[in-house]
Image (cartoon, rainbow, N blue to C red; front, side, top):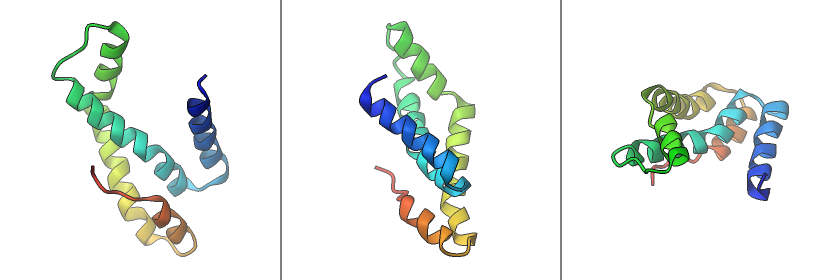
Length: 99
Protein backbone atom coordinates (compact mmCIF):
# COMPACT_ATOMS: atom_id res chain seq x y z
CA UNK A 1 0.00 0.00 0.00
CA UNK A 2 1.33 3.45 -0.88
CA UNK A 3 2.31 5.64 2.11
CA UNK A 4 -0.37 8.26 1.37
CA UNK A 5 -3.05 5.57 1.04
CA UNK A 6 -1.87 3.99 4.29
CA UNK A 7 -2.00 7.36 6.07
CA UNK A 8 -5.53 8.09 4.83
CA UNK A 9 -6.73 4.59 5.74
CA UNK A 10 -5.20 4.96 9.21
CA UNK A 11 -6.94 8.33 9.56
CA UNK A 12 -10.33 6.79 8.65
CA UNK A 13 -9.86 3.90 11.06
CA UNK A 14 -8.81 6.28 13.84
CA UNK A 15 -11.87 8.50 13.19
CA UNK A 16 -14.13 5.42 13.31
CA UNK A 17 -12.53 4.01 16.45
CA UNK A 18 -12.11 7.14 18.55
CA UNK A 19 -14.49 9.75 17.16
CA UNK A 20 -18.23 10.05 17.01
CA UNK A 21 -20.39 9.55 13.93
CA UNK A 22 -20.02 13.20 12.93
CA UNK A 23 -16.24 12.91 12.85
CA UNK A 24 -16.43 9.74 10.77
CA UNK A 25 -18.83 11.37 8.31
CA UNK A 26 -16.49 14.38 8.08
CA UNK A 27 -13.56 12.05 7.41
CA UNK A 28 -15.41 10.12 4.68
CA UNK A 29 -17.09 13.07 3.00
CA UNK A 30 -14.18 14.41 0.91
CA UNK A 31 -13.66 11.07 -0.84
CA UNK A 32 -17.37 10.34 -1.24
CA UNK A 33 -18.06 13.78 -2.67
CA UNK A 34 -14.96 13.90 -4.85
CA UNK A 35 -15.28 10.36 -6.19
CA UNK A 36 -18.94 10.94 -7.01
CA UNK A 37 -18.12 14.13 -8.94
CA UNK A 38 -15.18 12.53 -10.77
CA UNK A 39 -17.17 9.37 -11.58
CA UNK A 40 -20.08 11.38 -12.94
CA UNK A 41 -17.81 13.61 -15.04
CA UNK A 42 -15.79 10.64 -16.31
CA UNK A 43 -18.80 8.59 -17.31
CA UNK A 44 -19.35 10.65 -20.44
CA UNK A 45 -16.24 9.13 -22.05
CA UNK A 46 -15.29 5.76 -20.59
CA UNK A 47 -11.61 4.85 -20.87
CA UNK A 48 -10.60 1.64 -22.57
CA UNK A 49 -8.52 0.51 -19.58
CA UNK A 50 -10.84 -1.96 -17.78
CA UNK A 51 -9.75 -1.01 -14.26
CA UNK A 52 -10.32 2.68 -14.89
CA UNK A 53 -13.67 1.99 -16.55
CA UNK A 54 -14.75 -0.15 -13.58
CA UNK A 55 -13.72 2.60 -11.12
CA UNK A 56 -15.64 5.25 -13.04
CA UNK A 57 -18.64 2.96 -13.40
CA UNK A 58 -18.71 2.32 -9.64
CA UNK A 59 -18.48 5.98 -8.66
CA UNK A 60 -20.80 7.24 -11.41
CA UNK A 61 -23.52 4.98 -10.03
CA UNK A 62 -26.71 6.84 -9.01
CA UNK A 63 -26.85 4.97 -5.68
CA UNK A 64 -23.34 6.14 -4.80
CA UNK A 65 -24.23 9.71 -5.84
CA UNK A 66 -27.27 9.57 -3.54
CA UNK A 67 -25.11 8.30 -0.65
CA UNK A 68 -22.59 11.09 -1.23
CA UNK A 69 -25.41 13.65 -1.36
CA UNK A 70 -26.90 12.28 1.88
CA UNK A 71 -23.52 12.44 3.60
CA UNK A 72 -22.98 16.01 2.38
CA UNK A 73 -26.47 17.13 3.52
CA UNK A 74 -26.28 15.29 6.82
CA UNK A 75 -22.77 16.56 7.57
CA UNK A 76 -23.91 20.13 7.01
CA UNK A 77 -27.05 19.93 9.18
CA UNK A 78 -26.13 17.55 11.99
CA UNK A 79 -23.42 19.57 13.80
CA UNK A 80 -25.93 22.40 14.32
CA UNK A 81 -28.06 20.06 16.45
CA UNK A 82 -25.25 18.93 18.73
CA UNK A 83 -24.26 20.50 22.01
CA UNK A 84 -20.67 21.73 22.30
CA UNK A 85 -17.92 20.57 22.09
CA UNK A 86 -18.95 18.07 19.43
CA UNK A 87 -20.67 20.71 17.28
CA UNK A 88 -17.57 22.90 17.47
CA UNK A 89 -15.24 20.01 16.67
CA UNK A 90 -17.37 18.81 13.77
CA UNK A 91 -17.96 22.30 12.46
CA UNK A 92 -14.22 22.88 12.25
CA UNK A 93 -13.80 19.61 10.31
CA UNK A 94 -16.47 20.43 7.73
CA UNK A 95 -15.54 22.94 5.10
CA UNK A 96 -18.29 22.23 2.59
CA UNK A 97 -17.53 24.45 -0.34
CA UNK A 98 -17.75 23.18 -3.92
CA UNK A 99 -14.68 23.77 -6.06
